Length: 134
Image (cartoon, rainbow, N blue to C red; front, side, top):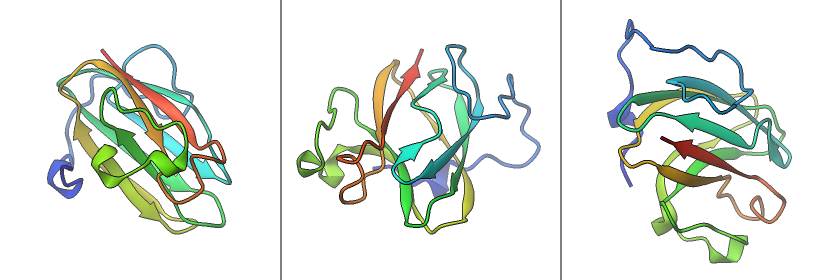
């Protein structure tokens, strides 16, 4: 798993697109917002460009901790008991309620990646989505 801290964008980087909301959609973007609550993400699909840094602003609007973990390509999790840390390609680590963080990562390989909240019980409660990298 690559460190999220190693991939942070420096201030002043020009973004090709600015998707300032969390609506997701079919057009790849270089930044988006994600809000987590019990037990869902505000959106279940996001898009990004392969080889381009993507900046994700994650806010935990819930009462318990949440995270945003991208599962390795082809290793989808159907239930929480299948999860191990080896499944994680990259993640925004668990955040307490009310916390907002922005982190960046470059997805080099196109494909559809599963996104989960990997905390115990959260996948089973429905905290899943997908990230389409083209």
